[in-house]
Length: 454
Image 1 (cartoon, one colour):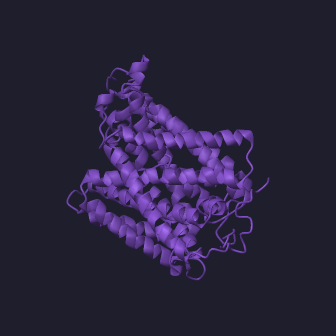
Image 2: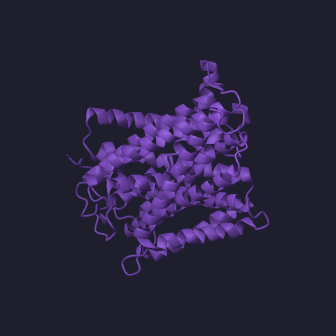
Image 3: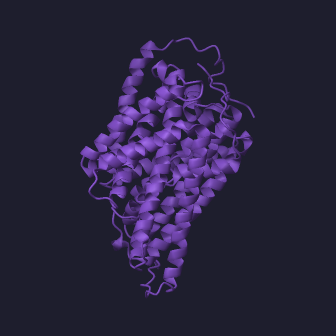
């Protein structure tokens, strides 16, 4: 098997640039809108969902970063799964991830179209979806430098939007907006903090973790660091920033309005500010949602193209998908992604809203299945310290808790079973493909199950 070590000509980046790209790949409509669903489920205890998600995400990121430092691979988590557990693991990990990201991109495009139609209600959704898809592909065709520039700008804008909400919320609570503030609803007891008990917090966890989805993309980008050993620092800073602003912004929204006021089809931040009659706040945040959705969609496009190229180079996808034009642009993989993106958008437009919501929830759960592969590969390929083993075990427990928690709500339960169907399909294809794989081990992988000593 080809190792795909770092031999590309992509521009190297500093650790803080990786942190910024991580913010861009992470903050999306999953946070701005999904947090409203989580608040309805868990009440004020939803803050715990996002704190636990930040901790669990860091465990997974640290494991991925340390494998990258020890053995840089452009295929990242997918290559480590193959090295740790064999061909079947790399194949299934890559295709499960590909399928989940295709569904997520389709949902992002649908969301972008809906947000934009807020300003132009007479234009069909598919027109806006097609425009955003074309713009995303243009960014990908600009190469790594163009991708960096666009994502860095959008990352700053998204963080600025959240900070703007925090500032406005603070001013509103103090009554400085010219509108008498409503009563601040700070939970005073365990029952008020957990209005739906632990059974309410469990299904909310998937939305907390979904708010940090995209960590695999940062694993792919870590290959471009100037100093590879700074990858863990980049993740710590990124997750500390995200975890802090997530918890503060959601906490402010919760104390500004009663829990019953939050709805699933409106951002909790818009709900919280609307009562203060701030001019143009709905329009401003509608623009923020478009920026967030476009940014995460482009990041997903980058990851899908990268994974598809590596799958092809390893013989796990048609060989032509691994080709690059002038050794730079993966045009076949981009074209293949675009074709499936069209299919995904068609499904999102034609399917009833709830059905496609179930598909996107399933995609989020499928990302967590890959997190299990990452944690498992970490312990298989590296010799871990006692502290690292503890983090690995806690990571497994948190991911298992999140996946199991989806069964406790009718909103997320269908997504769990749909995710199992997708994984089952990949498993069937994997079993069929085993007949075509060569049994002898690749000569350039003599230490497939050998731990890498540090």
